[in-house]
Every structure is written in C-alpha cells, then in structure tokens.
Image 1 (cartoon, rainbow, N blue to C red):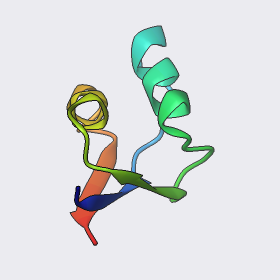
Image 2 (cartoon, rainbow, N blue to C red):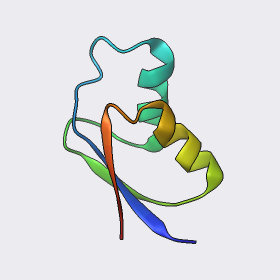
Image 3 (cartoon, rainbow, N blue to C red):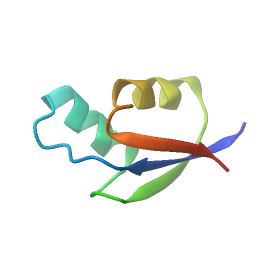
Image 4 (cartoon, one colour):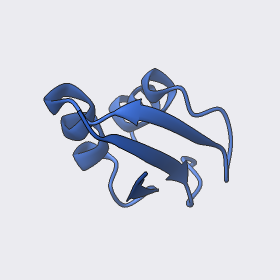
Length: 59
C-alpha cells in the first residue's frame, strides 16, 4: 500500500466532537504536526471526514 503524510493545517477549535476525536485517532497532536500512515480505506475515510482541517500528500 502507498503511504500518505497527514498534516493538520487548521485548528480543531470550533469543530464538533466527532471531528476532534478523528484527528486524535489519526495520531495528530497539535497544529502543523504530521503523521505517516498506510493509505488503507479506513484511514482514507477518516481523512475525508476532516479534510478541511488537514493536508494530505503521498510519499
């Protein structure tokens, strides 16, 4: 599987509880923090729910 880098670019303040929990479940701790994950359907689904808060790039 391909790997992706997920970077938080917008604050999660003002987001609902589900979106905040999704950001934390991805392993992102704070603004401009990034994680590298496998591009599985589960991870891509989580990213699509918070796409307005994160930036995704393939590596």
